[in-house]
Image: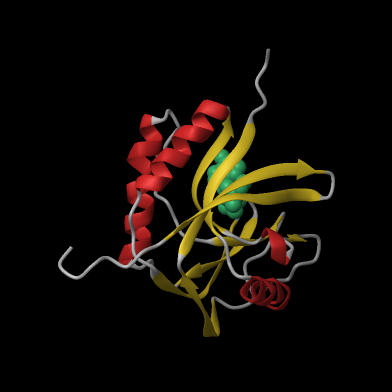
Length: 182
Ligand code: 2AM
């Protein structure tokens, strides 16, 4: 019997108000004619793309996530950009705080042991705002960064529907302040 495989990834998911603002930014800062703007509900920051996963791989990924410890952090989102090859327009944090780097680099080895492929390209924090985009942003940065207090990461299932990708959060793990000296 062929087991159902879910397409999974780990991500940071913006709260609804921030997601709505990011959706507005996508409309204001890019010449979006012919491009496909993500809906507010689709906007996220991918930490690790797992890809199609069976039940064992899914459980393995959850076990790894449960062992990962990293403190909460704040992202200042203002950098805007465009990658011509995947044709995406994005917003990115001005800097990746050490806690974000720690989160990603603590997930990677365990997920590698589960059999997931670690992308050899360096991981770049970004939130895709538009797809099928042909032009760079109208400006390179927002005047005022959007601040995002991140206190959890999530495991998400991606489904491709005729109207585009639909994402469902399957599980959440809190980011927890390290005890002083610990
Ligand atoms: P993107 O936003 O830069 O396109 C779900 O598909 C998420 O996983 C997307 O945010 C996508 O990043 C990311 N992702 C990373 N590698 C991927 C791959 N090989 N195929 C599909 N999505 C990938």
